[in-house]
Amino acid sequence: MKFSNYLAGIAASCALVAGFASGASAADIVLRYSNWLPAGYHLTEGVMKPWMEDVERVTEGRVKVEMLPKVVGTVPGQYDVAADGLADVVLFPPAYAAGRFPIEDGLELPFVGLDPLKRSVATWEIYKKYMEPLGVFKEVHVVSIFSSNSTHPMTTGKPVKSLDDFKGLKLRSPSTAVTQEIELLGGVAVSKPISELYELLSGGIVDGAIIPIDTVKGFKLDGALKQVTVIPGGMSNNMVMIAMNPAAWAKISDADKKAIDEVSGAFMAKRNGEVIAKKLADSYEVLKAAGLTIEDASPELSAALKEKLMPVVEDWYKRAKEAGLENPEAFLKELSDGSGGIY
Image 1: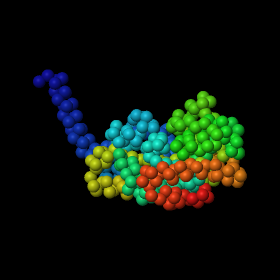
Image 2 (image 1 turned 45 degrees about the vertical axis):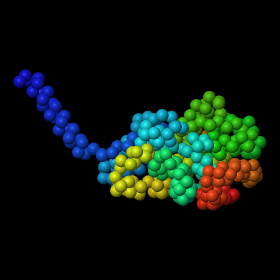
Image 3 (image 1 turned 90 degrees about the vertical axis):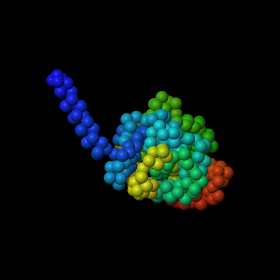
């Protein structure tokens, strides 16, 4: 036998042994997570990564979640990425699919509340009570659904202090409800993912946005936005859903499914609420230090907004009933923390 062939044989044997060794310790199921959030974002660090660790722990390593290096498909298309199996796990704001989930639109309405923990937990409970029985999101397995912090108008120039200040403003909208609000107030709504907002602001394509306060620093918008007006109850409440491909979920054993459910659903919603509550508290000081002006809306502006924007709520009542929701008023009452004062 030639020496070179002898060495090749040893190398092949070592590779085979290594393969057996790695196979013995590898997970039975590896779920691919399509991530589009920026590096270091609090939702990734405080919610998604801990959940991934929990999944591996509670299944004793049989199921692992692997974060892919870049997003699969487009950000607005993440729901279908999960439904079609292009990735196994996605993070998806349902509002990005405008008009597709009319009952879910109720979670996005104005004046629902400012308490992130209460709203986040209530969102999951309402999904289970009102939405899941009607087959909302039936194309995917819903791991959890929870809220972001409430949204508020922010601008690159003059602050919003009256209804007249909204007129003519081009504002990025995160949802169907906010698009309706902006149009009722005489502004121009621009519906784009928040991942594109910096370019929209810096390019002068929009004059501002209606977004949560804690997203400003995370998406590096503090260099473009200058003014924030805090509205009691918020202008909307953006939702975040963690969804899994049904075929991928079906591959997991019943025992491991049960274990994963225990660290998902309500558990994950509560964790998110705690994370975003802390992030919101920290963000006020961070943004003020960065030079943003943050002011509470006057009682006059708050009252005027509630009167002006009630057609958005009434429109949702109508659309939700048409979609099969019998009691949308109870839906909103259970979601609200009362700080908006209308539910």
